[in-house]
Length: 391
Image (cartoon, rainbow, N blue to C red; front, top):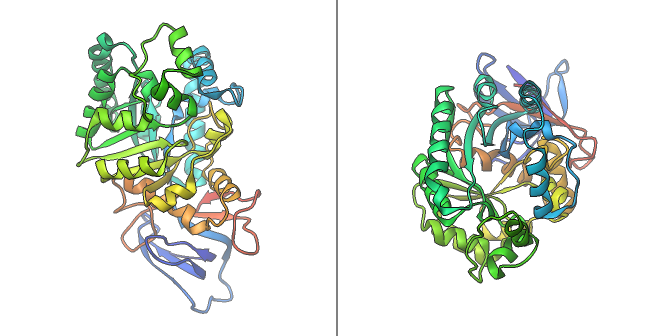
């Protein structure tokens, strides 16, 4: 079958095509070819918008979908942690499952073909396993006390076995510096690296940096007030602490999520120590929690691979990828739709090791096809833009 559109964004190094087409096999969505410049038949339906590959949500916590609209905005990370501790598990299981199903279905319809999803329990496993969307599940671990490390890892590995029994790709992964002892950070990272994929919340907030660099600030005080041990005070960044703890990583894909406080020096060191390092941008979540944004211009200059995620409904109004793209376009001048789409499709696909199937429109691939509508006269996103799956 052939689909015509005002714009085609093949990605994969191919330039956008004005008044183009994509050919695909209707049986399984395999791309057969694409092009433009040919005369369009008079009776053809030309979609008014941009046809793109399916999106990859590079960071989500779909199991927290029952928390939508429960959180106060702008509380900073310490305030956010207090809220999530108070509100976690306050809904019955059936409500949680219903909300997970609703969000999984909505993401698929809007064009998400794959997702890197964080799980702390098994609530989402069966629903993800039944979805046409590919998911890799990162079993996030917490534990500030060194003596708890063995027990936490045993629980995470048991959860991993349950995920595997559902047919999911899954492995333990570390959460963040402020919720883990150095022993647990190292142990969970080792499991993740053995599996080939690690996702880690890194430099999300200045509170995290204060905690590691000087042993002060709201997050430090929050952890102390809760009677928890705190990570070592190093005088440096939390990213340096993470890199120093895990050491060089040569044979795994590592996703640093958020990186609101990343510096050019940090980006360079991460790339030196981890050849396959990526950064997941979650701009609306960053605004929701602490009214900040990552240093996108510096990240672009650094050459570090970028991906795009939504985070969870505890720190976002929706799991809508186009809204994340629009947020980037509105806050960073000069970003083209093509570049943002490369992060939204290719970056996440490559992190998940699915770049041979997903991420771009090319013969033999099966990325899914998505239409983004309501573009302006120059082909940029507008507040009315939305997406829906074609294939």
